[in-house]
Figure 1 (cartoon, rainbow, N blue to C red):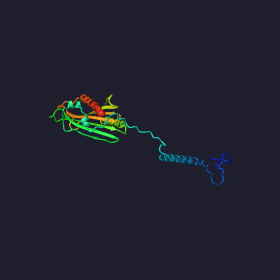
Figure 2: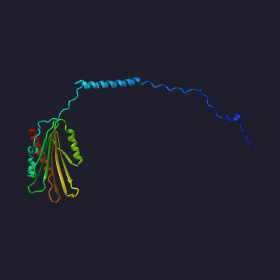
Figure 3: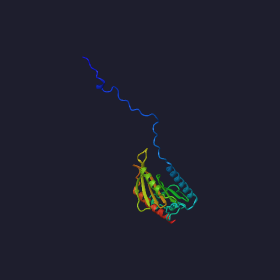
Figure 4: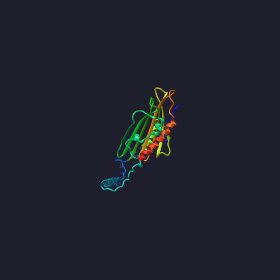
Length: 244
C-alpha cells in the first residue's frame, strides 16, 4: 500500500518562521544613577562639626560640665593602726580561751583605700592541738563604690558551694557564708568555714572562722554558735571602728 505525502499546503510550513531582524548598533545605555554629592557633603559637614566641637571642649574650660562622681559615704568609720587590739572578739574568746601564737596585723593608708587586717589562732585549752583560725579585714573605699565587688564576692562564694544566708539590719548589706568541705583523701575529716561579710557605705568588712574535726573522734562545732559569735563580735568591731 502506498503512502501519499502531504502537499505543502496540507502539512503547513516546513520550517519555523525566522525572527524579525533587529537593527545593528550598540545596546542602549543604562540609566544614570542619581548623584550622591548632597549626601557626601552632608557627611563631611557632620564630621567637620564634630571635630570643631571636640576642639572647643578641649580648649575652652567649663564649656561642658560632666557629672561629678560621688565618693562613698564613710560615715564615722576611721582607720586604726592595730585591728587586733581594736577588735576584742569577746564571744570567740569565751569559746576558745587559749591563744596559739602571736596575732598578726597590718594597716595601710591610701587616698583611695584604707586597709586593716588581723589574724588570730585560738584553742579551747592550752594542751589541745586543734585550733580555730580567725581572719578579719576592714577596708574604707574612699573613691570607688564597693557595691559591685561586694555582690561579686557573694556570687563567688555561691559558686564555691557556700551556703549563703542574708543578715538583716547590719550595715547596708550583710550575709553569712558556710562551707563544710570534706577531705578528698579521708572523708571522715571535715574542714569548716563560716564567714560574715558586711558592707556599710564605703566600708567593707569580713570576719572568718575556720576549724576542723574528724568523725568518731571529735564533736563538730555547733554551726549556730559560731554564727552568733560572728554577728556579736562583728557588731562590736564596727562600733569600735566608728568610735575610734
